[in-house]
Image (cartoon, rainbow, N blue to C red; front, side, top):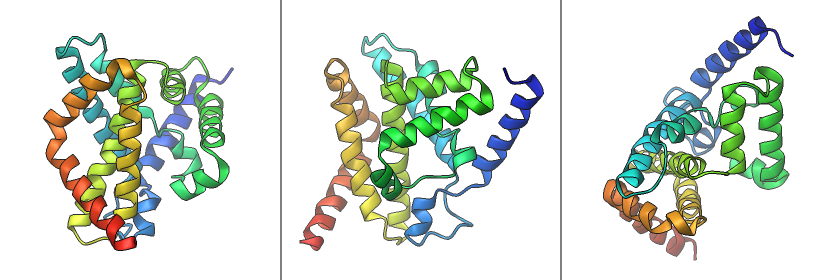
Length: 209
């Protein structure tokens, strides 16, 4: 069992790290570290997106907690405060399951398995609820929206944009019970961004042929 002080120290260290660590994928595409989105900024945007998406689902009759969805999204990258930002290329090499096991193990070691941080992260990794699914969609959507912003600023982030666009669509389709309502909520809230992304990715694909 970890001492309370030890957990507090771990939390403060993680918070400082995620506030100050730029997301590596952006820098690999030429975005300067000084303006690259931090892990904490990504987590915060993900949480707000999860809140409004889940609320949209609730208004459509889906039994879901917007607050829990937002909480899961808010902590989904907390282990990166100890592991650093692991880019997609690295995940492809080591396997997503290995990455997720490492994140849960670190959260267990630093915060304890009885902590809210560990349990929220566990829900996210296991994708065992509607709230966890919405948190995952929100996290992916946050990355997609940030890629659109960087693309508008002239940075070559099309690969990230198109990869995450495909990931959003796969996640939405993962739960047949939620799929239609979730598609409707996303269209109502972010239809313009999805259409812009779709157009950009078709151009990107054509240019690579």
